[in-house]
Image (cartoon, rainbow, N blue to C red; front, side, top):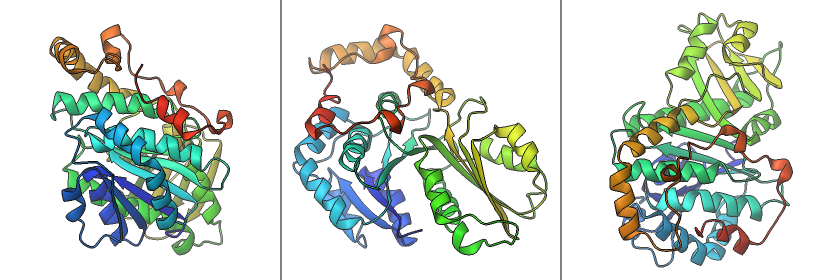
Length: 355
C-alpha cells in the first residue's frame, strides 16, 4: 500500500508530518515558500521551493498567488516524484503557506487528475484554540474553502487541541500506517480486507478518522467508540453519518453495537487479528462542532479583526464571513465527486481570488 499512497507536504507543519511519513517508507514531495524551512529537511528526497517565495507570515493570499504563479512547475514535480493511486496534500489550516496554498492546490490537483485513476485527499491540522486569533481566522477560512472543493476524497483533520503537536503527528503516522498494512498483515479465514477496499475507504468524500486499540484494552465496543471521541481528530457532530467502517477486529467487539454507537454505514470491510483493533471511519460529516469553537473565538474578537481587515485588506478580498452573520460551513455543502467536471487551471485559480 505504501506504493499506492503519496503525499505533498506544504509548509512547515506539512513538512513535519511528511518527514515522519517518508521515514516510514512513503513517497513525499515537500513544497514551501521558505527555503530555510526546506533546508531543515536534510534527508528529504523530493523538495521544491515555490518560486518567488520568502515565507508567508500567515498571509493566505500571498501563498495563493505564489502557487498560482508556480503551478505548472509544481504539477510537473508532483508527476515526477509521486507515482501512486492517491495523493494526500498535507498542510496546517492555521498558518500562511499551508492554509493559503493547501485548499487551492488540492482543488487544482483534483481537476488535473480528473480523467485519471488518481484521487486527491487532504490531511490538515487545526490550530489549538489557545493559538493566535490570526491562526484561528486562517483555519476558519481554510475549511470554508475545503468544503467547496468538488471531487475531493477524504479529509483527515488533526486537532492540536488534543495533544502536543509532535506527539500528535507521530500518533497519526503510526495509526495511518497500521491501517494501510491491514491487507498485508491481517489475514483470516473469517474474512479479509484487500487493497482495493482500503483505497475505496480513503477515496470517500467527507472526513476520515482512524483509531487503534491494543487487544488488552479492546474488551468492549464502547472502548472503540470512545477512542474516536478522545482521539487526535477534530470533533464532528454525532449525527450517525458514516459511509464505510473498515475494521480489523481483535477482542470482544460487537459490530452491531458499534454501528449503534457510530452509525450504520453503506458498507463494512472487516477482518480479524490477534494484536489490536484498527478501525477506520470514512465519509463522516464536516467538523462543524469544532469549527463552531473557532467561530466563537473569532466572533469574540470581531471588532478588532474588522478594524484590521478594513485597514490592511486588499480591495479584492471580501470580509470574513462572520461579519455578515454567516455560521460555519455545513457538512451538507461538501461537494461530491459525481458533479465534478474538468475545467481549466485558470478557472480553478479564479475561485480563490476574492472578488
